[in-house]
Image (cartoon, rainbow, N blue to C red; front, side, top):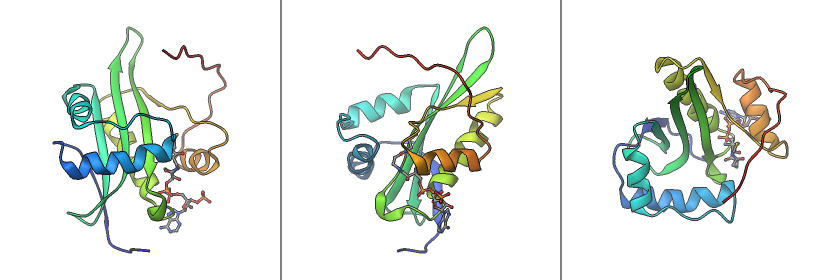
Length: 148
Ligand SMILES: CC(C)(COP(=O)(O)OP(=O)(O)OC[C@H]1O[C@@H](n2cnc3c(N)ncnc32)[C@H](O)[C@@H]1OP(=O)(O)O)[C@@H](O)C(=O)NCCC(=O)NCCS
């Protein structure tokens, strides 16, 4: 296991290594998710509301994790949502997930959001522990979706 410094930064451009990294990481969130093309990643970066973070193993190193924070306004409040928190399997247990999540929380606070929300399946035990360690509180509400 590497012990080099972990660098978390917003993605500013799409490169082949980013496309490769997302193709490696997204199946670790769910194996049937479509892999994002360079064009899809460009679309993500162009979205004013979205900040995509990556964690690198060393300043110029391999991408070992990602997270996405989306800031949006409704009449009631300025919200943030945390999505797509994923750390590459061999890099887990080094605090990368915690660093990605903490940076997303910091971005939301600095943007003036009054809340940052996420959903995670109760079966994702490591993720549930991680979020609770970082002061996310479980909110007793029903989540609904229509999947298109
Ligand atoms: C959930 C996930 C992002 C956590 O990533 P991670 O980088 O391993 O997270 P961390 O290292 O910050 O914390 C995980 C564990 O390692 C421990 N840890 C943290 N820093 C550590 C370090 N420096 N050295 C050793 N262990 C450490 C933590 O205590 C934690 O242990 P716990 O689960 O017993 O509390 C990762 O497991 C993952 O990608 N899972 C699959 C996708 C997923 O479920 N994503 C969440 C979707 S909502």
